[in-house]
Every structure is written in C-alpha cells, then in structure tokens.
Length: 323
Image 1 (cartoon, rainbow, N blue to C red):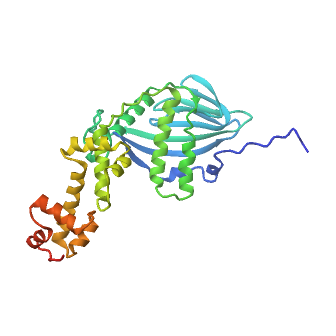
Image 2: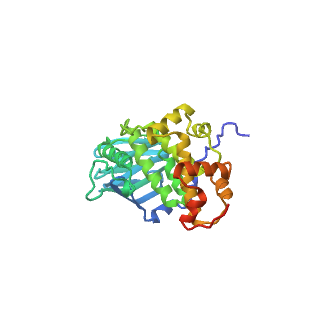
Image 3: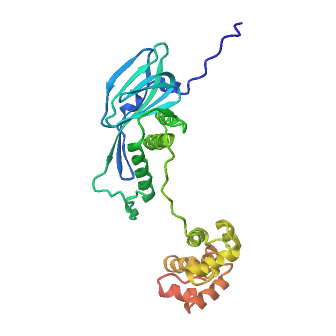
C-alpha cells in the first residue's frame, strides 16, 4: 500500500465536461432593469499545459473564472499570475493574452455577454409599474453596470462563488429542468453581481420602508376576503398578521373609519346580496355559507343595514323566494 499517494479531490465542474459548450447553442436575451443583455458564450474550456491565446480584445464583456489549474494573463501591458479560484474581466476593449502553465493544465469558465442601454430609457427609476420592471430592479441593474464599467483591470479571488452559477445553469439544461431560461437569466445576473462584489463593496440602493399600518391592513383585508365564510374573530386575524387584537382594531379604524366587525359584516353582506340576486338557495343556506350563525341573525343584520329583509331584497332583484 502506497501511503504517500493522495486521492485527487473531485472536480466540482466535472458535469460540464460532458458537453462544455452546450449552453453556447442557446440564443438567450433578456432585459434587466433598463439594460438588454445577450449571451454569446457561457461555457467551460480547458487549456492544456503551455497553451497560449495571443493578444486580442472584445467590444463586449467577457468574464473569466479559473476553477482548476494555473497560468497567467496579461491585461494591457501588465502580467498577472492565475490560479484556482480567481476571476478577471476583459472588456469592453481590454487587450489581453492568456497562457496555461507550462506543466499544468488550466480550466476556465467563460461568460461572454453584450450589455446595451435600452433606447429611450432613463437612468432614473420609473414609478410606473405597468411595464412590470420594478424600479428597484432598475436601480440595482444601474448600480451593478456602473460598477462593472469602473472595475480595475486585474484578477481577484472569486470570494462570492460566482463560479457556482455556471454549474447551476448547466445542470438546469442537463436535467431539462422547467424554467431553463429563467435559471440561465438569474445565473448571469448573479455572476455580474458577485463579480462586482469580489472587487469592492458595492453600495446598494436604499429599498423603501413599508407603511406598516397600511401593509397590515392589506394583509388583514385579503385574509378576510379569502375566508369571510368562516367564523372569523379579531384574535384570529390579528394572529395571522402578527399584531395584537388591539392594534388590529386600531388599524381598521384608521383605514375604514369603522371597526373590524363592521368590515367583516360589509364583506359578507356584499356576497349575500349577490347570492340573493343570482341563485335560489334558501336564506338558511346563504347565511351559513357566508359566515352567519343563523338565518335569524342574518335577517336582523340585513334589516338593520339595508332597511329590508333578505327575502324582500331577493324579490326586488330577481331571485326566487325561499326561506
């Protein structure tokens, strides 16, 4: 037994060696904030020992990651040593030269994309949400692209594990996962974000703080609309929105001018009026299906609210008279 022999550690990107250029065949374009992004290359490549790629440049962005091996890169006129776990960005228009070590192969994960500002789009986040592009997505994309344009031309450690995004996208393709386009899109966005973080602390746009009273009111309102047919109590709904019953009562007074119970009653009666007009269920059935304990109690509440009985309302609005 050779005690001096060590078992080589598994290569995390072994799966990508099966079809290293598979994702390059996909024509992927998407919008991120006010930018259009088109993917040209998203692959794994191997440089055998001593392999040289002579000086060249791109008008687009090319991200390089070294998952295994070592070599060197010349960026402009400055040479840098490369080793496992490093990344560098070449572009746009950065002249560069790549070389694997003379005795050791060097693997590379490469993302080559074009990033263009969309015509007519302002740098300022829009408050119009109808186009389904969040103003916070616009702000994040803007901050990231601006950082990319200012990154120093030198390799750094991939300390935020952007390389893992290559495997995430490849595995989605290999396993024919649902939502492949979305996985690739999010993988590319994460590579951009994690690359900028690797170079510097990127300031994040301030996200808005919620108006918590309004937020809790909307949560309670939706819960009541979804469950009005159940025997809801102030305590039940307060627990769902994680505040005290007293706070919830105050929230409803502030937003509706009435009480919690009055709001539930309003929701239930709106449904009951619709059912009285459109179907011939008995008043007992309608009462129970809309959260009232009995037809008698419904009769009392209905008469107090509308000045008429449920059957009288039904007679005037086209339903059948049933008790």
